[in-house]
Length: 626
Image (cartoon, rainbow, N blue to C red):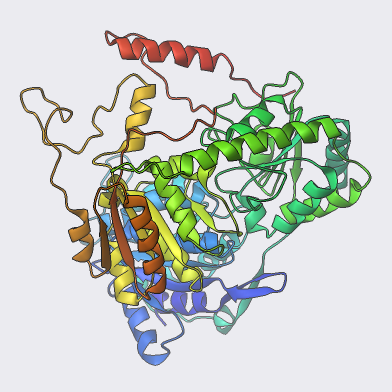
């Protein structure tokens, strides 16, 4: 067999086992072919498509980045039990996957990358894709994957395939280590033959480990919980990946501890649960952030406690606050925590619930967070109310999506004002029902990520919410949805610019500079003063083979949006719903903060004022190491 043929057949026989769940680890391969992979991986996929069509399904991609985004969306929706392989041609075809690699690694989501290298023989160098650094003749463009990958290997010789492939699967199926996994395949090596050990091609099961907590670490955490008067649980994406939502509710209900969530943890508790305070941090709710400020023990479960979650280090202000962390990642466990518990979320929560059966928080604390929760919900309801403006706010659009969707639907967002306001406004009603890419907030992730979610959950409607800026960056995956008969519903909000970045500019004293979609004013050297560009994104979407519903500006725009979403839900194919919104109407404040420095010296009054506010908030920053 060739190296490529052996690799494809090997991948087709890899399985993950997670308790009672058994599924293929690599469910298919995305690929864009060119010099570098057409005679190797491309030939292997075609050969198996003709001889064994179900062995390794092949999926066309429109951009290399989009195929990685699809894989990430699929992996999250599959609770990290399955993913795709992605192959790119040499040079730009492979390096186009770099941004996706960074996202997968940052989010701890598995994806297998198979970038191509120039000929290993180097007879005809310099070749395209060959970096040609004078100090190191072995460096190629694919070396850029090294710092972005959780595992990296390059198959210089055919015999190296076996250990490289096994090493890749080890990391892909390890919940503590997973992320982007890269095997670089030189063009000629892909097509070279080798004698393949029969056992290499047999079915192989990879058990996803769910380690119990160490007894000493668990005892320390239990002691801290029993001593705490105002504990708070912060649930992250790890709760969903370890299927620990039921265990989380069990502990919360038994102990009375309130629960806030990270953006990735949305859906780990339903909105109507009396102890659910909503998201915490920069894009959080006032209820979660106010309770967090007074918490004396913060228990992070499956959460990295990123700057968004901690409001850039200002979230927890109790003078004696301690931070405990339950996670499979030892790095994340000690990043902020003085009480690390390196273990599976579900197993640890079950142990805590059993040990704390005779303990609960005081009634006064229950009453306090219940009042904060009720006040937040009233504030949210007011923000979601129809105001009958010709150009609705982002909050009203989120409310329409919420109203028209069913409990099992999945809403997808990643960047811009929609992703900024969605966490605090959304009412999660099911696990994995809110998919916001927060690890890198990659603009353009929304549509390919939504297609990936649809692949993983074909029985659930997927509603993608994005602005025109994100749409313009990576809308080509609509063609993929059309070609494969995949259904997503895209709510495209025309803001005539980058609304969320404009708001960041205001925080930094730069106003909306460089964020408005307008004609260039050459005399003023500015995009701020020209007329709006006559962009017709609805027509653009229609040209890509999907159905389009246009909603004109009017007082009835939100009513029409609700009706359009319901109509799209009844359809069997992808629909894009185009609506124009007002980017300057901000939703309710969650009282969180994000560190966006303002220039220390400036001639602009706005910048001077922004710097003063920045210094005030930065004074509240602290390290939680007590």
